[in-house]
Length: 108
Image (tube, rainbow, N blue to C red; front, side, top):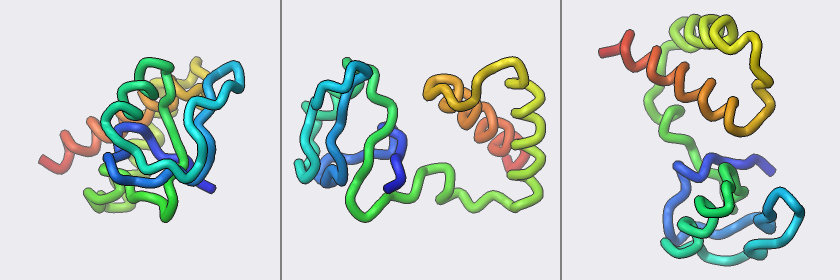
């Protein structure tokens, strides 16, 4: 089961897994159809990713960047973030954001 960024979640989607906070408390059970209030609660509790039934293509994937540009952005991002723990959710979000900004600047 793959998690997707909360930024890519829309109301009406169905949870594929329980959403838990950092202490392991269940905030919302699997199977719930999401609404705006749920998304606000997730933001309040610092939830960055959730699992959605059927998966969702991220906004970045929909842009269809050329593979060589993706690789270039990935290599440069690794250099810029070399002293950070990329597995940390916040750093990973910043890493991905930096890559996408770089690719957007090259495409436009």
